[in-house]
Image (cartoon, rainbow, N blue to C red):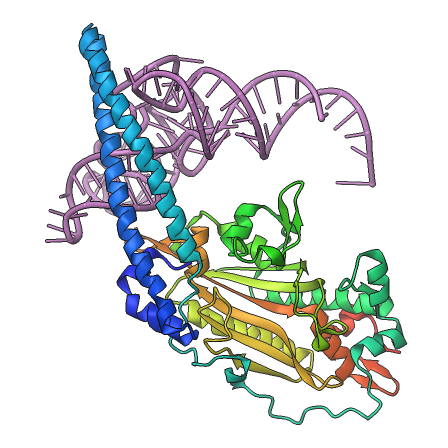
Length: 426
RNA sequence: GGAGAGUUGUCCGAGUGGUCGAAGGAGCACGCCUGGAAAGUGUGUAUACCCCAAAAGGGUAUCCAGGGUUCGAAUCCCUGACUCUCCGCCA
């Protein structure tokens, strides 16, 4: 969430940001409500502190009177304190309500887009930051979509997943399973080479962690919830990995902190089922290698570009046709200040599939997480957080299978040979 | 799962109802000392919120978390989390 200080000091910029996200003008009045309520909160705080201060003062006096044996005076003072206490309890409760309401309003305000983010309403308004300049691969008329290829070569089995679990839980088999493992290995190796520390986080997180990265309270329905233990299955490695630095005050010299993790990702994705979600296009469980960076505000946009280059390199090594989109204000995620999406061409489906999203959250996440660093003057500042997929597997697999099919079988890109142990699925 | 012990600042560690944001030590930072360093020595060394135009200064809260007792809680009581030891179970 945005900091109150930002909202107070840069009100016009924030409102302009909301407009860029296509908030109707009248809805931006929430900013004024926040500023007003913050005023109430601060007055309330002052009030409460004064009451408590007086109580503390009297209590000390009572102690002294008791020590001097002046019991009667002490007793009369006790009733004074009791009255104050009553007042302060009321004030405290009121303050709690105010803060709750204020939080609720703050949670509803998305991040302010970076000035370089283009205006726009929907995905159609995204700007192509890097187009695919070569010809897109043309497949023969009898080319198969990946779900048909899976059947032909026994690579994954959706019906089996239904038997074991339910729709959206593919069972990978044989060379399909091997290909998955190869990709994970490849992505992790590349990330480590690029200076990311490899992390193996838990796949279940507690409420605090889910709140830290913003899955709670709003997106509760998107996560699988183990109610008995009150734990959530992670929708992305971003959640446990970013929470590593929750409540930390880092040294400036520790930045950037670069971490990578492979995890399965679990998404309930209630709704949104339809024509385009066949096969591996949208599933409840998929594998992903994530990269996360905590960095200095002065450097975070440079880091953002480095992350883009890293993902780009992966695409090239996999020899997949891809393009990079700079998302417009209307299509960006709630927490993001700037996002690039990577899309890969799926030749049989003849569609672009989103396989990576690389975002700079600036201080939007770290404000909730309380991830700070101490600057040169000893001042404590919020760090910036960034993350991106590098890469998400299921759709990459779909594209690999479709684009590389030949009458002899499916060709595996050279970069993966040492991981798969085979060059061809046949 | 059963029984017991514990959780204090960056770390170690004292503290069993008032003057405790918290002794002492280590570490760290800055200064003195030194040709330079070590040793020695002096000072400083939590976070959040609030008041103040700002600085200075001040207030409040925080000794695992949440409740309670009390005029007053790190200290007493209850609940929960976690850690350790023993027993049980187990890949």
